[in-house]
Amino acid sequence: TLHSPPLNLHVSQQKRPNQVLSQSIRRVNKATMSTNNDDEKPPTDVDAGADGENEGNEEDHRHEDAAEILSNLLQNQAALNFNSPNMTAATNASNTNVSVGEAQNAAVQQLLEAMKGDVSQGVGSEKGAKHAFWDTQPMLDEKGAANEPNYHQPIVPNKPPSELRQEPYNMPKGFEWSEIDIHDPSQRDEVYDLLYQNYVEDDGCVFRFDYSRDFLMWALTPPGYQKQFHLGVRSSKSNRLMALITAVPATVRVYQAEKPMVEVNFLCVHKKLRSKRLAPVLIKEITRRVNHTGVFQAVYTAGVVLPGHVASCRYYHRTLEPRKLIDIGFTRLPPRMTMARMQKLYKLPTETATPGLRPMTPDDVPGAHALLSKYLQKFQLATVFTQEEFAHWMLPRKGVVSSFVAEKVDDVGTKTITDFCSFYHLHSSCVGNTKHPTLFAAYSFYNVATSVDLTELMRDCLILAKNEGHDVFNALNLMENERFMTDLKFGMGDGNLQYYVYNWLCPTMKEKDVGIVLL
Image (cartoon, rainbow, N blue to C red; front, side):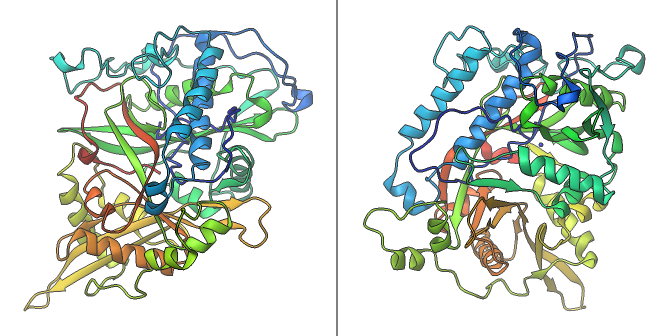
């Protein structure tokens, strides 16, 4: 999911007075696909003996640096959202986003200047920023999109294998490519450690994403996954894992066209190597490998505006444990609001109300798959799940994903799944907090209501998430989610999450037309 391009390149110098985490943490961990197969200069050599700790300055190479600078931009966006105090409906009512926008614009301006590219308008302007890397890529041209006569086809035609680069891209001296076996516990630990130490965290280093090992197994091993798409970079001297990029297969429908695609995720470069321009090489190499399998499109998200987004969504957040969220600095007690009133405001029943709502089992897969597949036909951008893929992504896994169904039984005893709700678990470590070491967050996944109103089903989903020990529940305003946001006291997050379809020409769409959730 450039489910948001990557990166963890922590470069923001802007810090907020209250360095608090907002789960506007849109999936800032994705990277995009490129079909550029021209040979380019390899990155600057790195001192392998220092295991990447030499961070000397290098001459700018605008085109090669662009992807890594993009990584920095996205990481900066993630860090800003990590720090956002504007998390709940109550907080929204008493705060504005003016300072947030100024901090974002200042930080992004600083990074754009580093690209030495001309910026004709303000950084916050979608039309103003020039992107040295992305402007060369086959993305939707928004300037001419309104009158485009050739929608619903690739921007750049697919290439036969003979016209693709045959050899892997060169690594800097002292580093080498390494395919990761995520089933190997020791390699899975390496991936976990790399992400935990070098992925998304807030400016104050107070909150840090903590993708569990079980979550990584789930995210990286859907049906049809390929080991060659779990691509690492190791130090030749120490064999230490220093960088990572991954891709998993998915069939995605854009309007009426179903296309095999990949979701690129977990693009992460070790903090000591972020001046070495590894990110562009990682992106080009994963692209080369994917292209050789006959796939030339990708769907991804990004927290900043890049050329050619097809839709823009926003995260909303629902407080489940107000006292803890205030204690850890995740949010603040609004003016004229007491803790007792805030707890009363967000109090939920302990029992669900939807008749027969229960955890999904393997026996429910055919009926629940049919229910969700029919529902997703309403939307213009959606994943097309096979039954096997549905089972992988939706069957409950403790601490990873939770799914629930309700069914009705007719007069002859035939059971039909009528309702389905789900959320996945993505937590953050509260660095140095011995009282509350972990922030437990649930993210809305896919939900379908036919026997009850969607608001009532999602109220039950909040109850189930709270009963499982979560502190906050996050949801995007895509699909039909806006129907329940106000009634269930969700607060608007800061910033938007842009959706992109790489190398595919199609009209833009509203957030309510988006029917795909990327991790």
